[in-house]
Image 1 (spheres, rainbow, N blue to C red):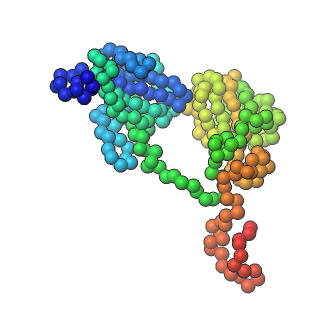
Image 2: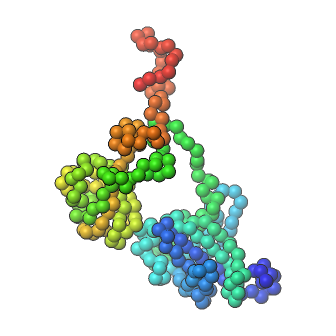
Image 3: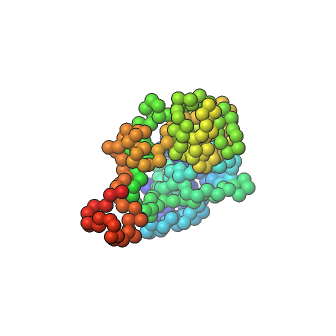
Length: 289
């Protein structure tokens, strides 16, 4: 018997089961049934404080009209992890399952968590279907700066190469800056526009972009957005060299100009408003800076 056959009987024993997979690979299972369910190698815990509103899936590219609503009372679903952003963009699959015969089930929704808000001891998360990605602008932008991210498939630079990253313990904090010692081998500003990854402590696994790298013996690292979890002296971090996406930086700092994904010789906006002048050679040839 299939789930459709079971539903056609008119007397049903169905429940919903949720599988949530974070970007760091951690997986959690929940169900609105009063007992734990198990299938596909995962246990879906009952009374986990996670429920859903009526699921309304729409055609087109609009966000599916549904939300996950829950209380922060499950051992695996903590306020600290939610506030740290560990569930942002987490993959989500929702099943409707016959809890008497769990082979009878169907997928109701597959997508990801969107905006998460918190009120008191409860949270509310927007559900985004697979078509949400098609609603975002795509295509290549033609401008002078590189469109790749340092170390990605387009850039192809190995950020683990000697001299381009460092693992160092946090020495302390000063106002909005993180203080690190032991970075004397790197010139000041080497990590500006780079990336910082927490390797230990409460913020382990979180990533932030570096705004400024200042100082010499004691380096002050300022982030664009603060890590959304507490950090303490002794926590280990990985710092990666920064790239401002300019052609000269790609050539001189990284030796990676063959993979540069910008157009450094494209005319600027001032060229669009240029006009002929008697004392200049306006031959109609190619523009040169």
